Image (cartoon, rainbow, N blue to C red; front, side, top):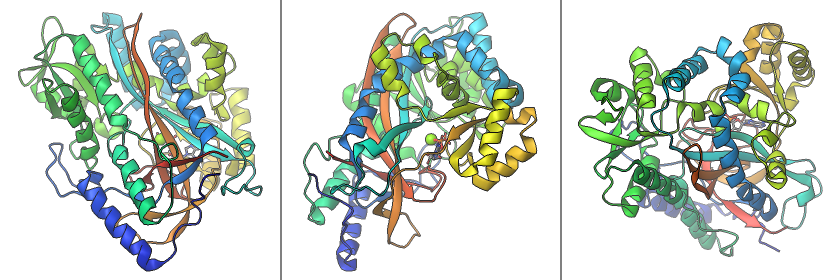
Length: 489
Ligand code: ADP
Ligand code: MG
């Protein structure tokens, strides 16, 4: 039986010592934020928030999440290719949500004129929580039996999936803190993890498929990039895999000011031909403050550059698409193998449409009658947008009978098992607190419409927050980086 981590060291001096070492470790190994960095990166580094110890994840749950990832990659790639499905899924949202409509318009315009580049690169992260239906019947490993735990998908990220860089360093950090605390572990309990290597391999392959050795990879970033080092890890790993490839960085405004399309739709930025555009921005309204950013996005989408992601892949990551995929028969329309369909479906939580009509009316009633059991989600990314509990109830009472509700979907609320850990965030006193975790599995995919050139699962991450905190973002300050301590229960 694996070691139980619930029994963390409590001695203040011992913990303080481990904390100091861990901070220095994080600083010297690039597990850092640069809070006020410009897109070019100039500012002081500070530790990214992290948990002092890893969090227990049962082996069966971990394996389930890892094993289904390649099937999810294929599913989501095919969803993005299916115009009729996307149109049906998003038609209500497009009418009421100007941001999604803006993306839809770009997608549609480029579809009608003909896509110049059939190849697309996707760097995905599939996020899960472990729902716990029985918190009383705890095994000697400190967690309930596997039968009382269910892996549930929270969302599927198709754009700017982050922390593949910083999290690789977290595994080594946690092995060290466990050693300092005298907690034994094996390599299968604390496995190697380097998502950035897999992501970089996807970029290198996409660059090769583009076929011009002089072309560059553009990292499209926002004006302020506190998470720049996470991006640098990818840049450095691209260089390790092929030192001939030049990575450049730029914003949507840079693309607008200095970018152009040649007659044969090559995307030229500052005299460089761009082979691959990797978006770490552009997933929220605040990335598009004027027509300039929208026209830059359109120009790139029209170009021959390989996009990561395409606008249609970004659209396929909408919560509305997730909800439509949960309908009976929907996954089956994309994936033939019944085993693959099952492995995908087994992770779905309850998802409900709020479109006008009796189905949506019933969902509104359900949420109002038991607000503690549901989450209201708009079509946004990056954390801080979901609505819970009494606030959700009030909002649904106000807008529940109008088309406004079509901006959202309703999702069953997941209740993960709390676990004790120390969360290291600047300005927060060091105490042992009850935490819950969300697990992300990274996937890389390249397709050209006919052929899958690459389909891999390439690593994992944990994000851990104090129990009772509704949201889960790290950059926005709710959660910390964490790794799984995988126990066989
Ligand atoms: P975003 O695209 O903003 O990241 P998510 O769907 O991932 O949106 O939700 C943000 C956070 O809210 C998650 O990281 C998780 O902590 C919490 N959350 C989302 N859905 C649920 C749910 N069904 N049950 C419990 N918590 C949830
Ligand atoms: Mg999320």
